[in-house]
Amino acid sequence: MEKRWVIKAEPERETVAKLIEELGVSRPIAVILAQRGIHTFQEAKAFFRPEIQDLHDPFLMKGMQDAVNRIEQAIASNENILVYGDYDVDGTTAVALMYSFLTRDYEQVGYYIPDRYSEGYGISQAGIEFAEDNSFSLVIALDCGIKEVELIAEAKNRGVDFIVCDHHTPGAVIPDAIILNPKQKDCYYPYKELCGCGVGFKLIQAINQSRNQEIDTIFEYLDLVMVAIGADIVPMTGENRILAYYGLHVLNNTPRIGFQRLLELANKTGELSVTDVVFSIAPRINAAGRIESGNQAVQLLLAKTFEEVDEISKTINAHNETRKGLDKEITDEALKMIQEDDWLLNATSTVVFNETWHKGVVGIVASRLTETYYRPTIVLTESNGFAVGSARSVKGFNIYEAIDQCSDLLTQFGGHFYAAGLTMELENVVPFKLKFNEIVAASISKKQLVPEIEIDCAIDFRDIFEEQRSSIPRFYRVMKQLAPFGPGNMRPVFVSRNVKDTGSSRILKDEHLKLSIMQEDYPDIVMNGIAFGMSEWYTSLQEGLVDIVYTIEENYWNGNVSLQLMVKDIRKSKPIF
Image 1: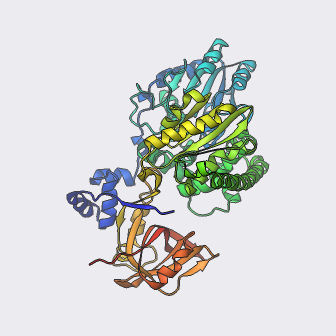
Image 2: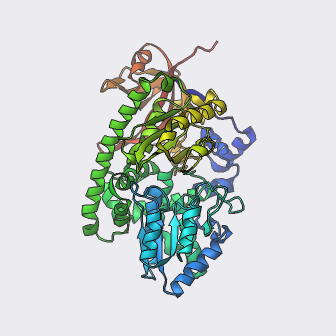
C-alpha cells in the first residue's frame, strides 16, 4: 500500500541554534527536541532526566479526597473492600497494583475480574451479586465503570458503594459514585492521558501522601504502571513519561517474579524497552483474559515465589500460542470475506461479522484489517445472543464519536479516539454497518484513508556518525535518551536520499531485504538495514538511487553491537535539476 511521507515542519532557527549551543547536540537532535516542545536547557533537562517529584499532586484530581476518605473509613470500620478491574493488561495490572497496596496493611480485601465471555466488559450484574453475596460494601473499580450508571445505582441500592478509577470518555450521565477520571469535564487535573492503572496509582499516591509516607515506598508498583502505559498505547508525554521512565527502571532492575517468568518464556534478555513490553509482556497478559480468565494474569502478578508462577506462567504462555493461531485464522477469514464482497471492498469503512469468531481476538483482528485496508474497522462476533466487537481507527479519525452517532442501534459502547468496544442486537448488525459507513464516508478525508509516515527530519548517513567511526556513535546515544518512546514521543523517523546498494544487499525468505547501503555523496559510510516485506525493491536498489524512511536501532549479533536501519518505506529518488 502506498504511503504518504509527511516531514514535520522545521522549528524556528533561533530555537535550534540555542539548543545546539546550550546542549552541545547535533542539529538533527536539536530539531527533534524543538519539534517535541523542548526549547530551553531546563526543558531538555526535565525531558532527559524526569524527576518523580514532578508528578502532579494527586489531590488535584476531582473526587480524590472523597476517595481517600472513603477507603480510610472502610478500613477503620473493618469493611470488606473489593478491587474490580477489566480483563485486559490495563485492568489486570491496576487490580494487582491496588490489591497489593491495600493488603500491605489491611487483610479484608478481595479482587474480581469479570469473565470476558459470560459477563463482558466493565461492571457486570454477576460482579455486583458477587460483592453483595460476599459482604463487600466498597468496590474500587479500575479501568472501567464510567458508563455503568444503572448497574452502579443498583449496587448502591444493595448497600455497595463504588469508587470508579477510569480513563475512558465519560457519557452524558455520570454514575452515582466517587469518580476519579481526569477526562471529566469539570475535573481540572493537569494531565488528562493517564491509563486506568495510572489513575489507580494516583489513588495509592494520594493515600500514601495522606499517611505522610514518602513516594519511594510505592516505587515497587511502577513496573505495573509502565506495562499498562505501554500496552494501552496512551501518550508517552507529561506524567505518563515520568511514570514509564521510572517503571522501566523497576522492570529492568527489580521486576516482580511474574514479569521475570514471562520474559524468560519470551526469550527476552538485556535491557528492556517499551517495545519489549508491548510485544513480549502485554500479549501474554492479555492472552489470559482472551482465552480463559483474566484472574490468571492477576495471580501471576501477585505471586511472590517462582513456585507460584511456574505453572500459571506456562499456562498463560500456552494461551498466547493459542491466541496467535486464532488471530491468523480469523484474520484470513475476514480478509477473504472483504475480498469476496464488492460492497465491503469499496466501502469507506470495514464492518465484518461472523458468529463463530473467537471474542477474545476480535480487537487484534480489527488491527490487522486496518493494516491491510487502511480505514476505520469494526470486527464483530456473537456472544450471549448479542453481536459484540472491537473497533480500530486510522490516524486523525475519532472512531468513538462515529460509533456514538450510531448509539440508537447499540446496547452498549465505550472507548477512546482510536479504539472502542461495542454491543448490539444481532438484527442491528446490517443497519449498523450501513449507518456507520455513511457516517465515516461523510466525515473522513481522502488523505486520512492513505497511511501516513510522519518523518522528523531528513539526514545524511554522515549525520549519524558525525566525526566518529565507533559502532554506537554519540548521535545514537543521545537519541536513545529520548526514550521511553510511545505516542506523542515516538522513536525518531528519518529520511535519507540518493541511497544505493553496496553490492551486498540480498533478499531474505523471498520477501524481506537485508540491506548494505551507502549514499552517493558519502561512499565511505556503509549502513546495514532490514526492510521487512519489501523484496520488490531489490532490483531498483541494484539499478539506481532510492530514498528511504527509517528508524535507527541497535543490532546484537555474536556478542557485537552495531546500528541497524529499520526501513519503513522506499521510493525511487527523483533527479534534482
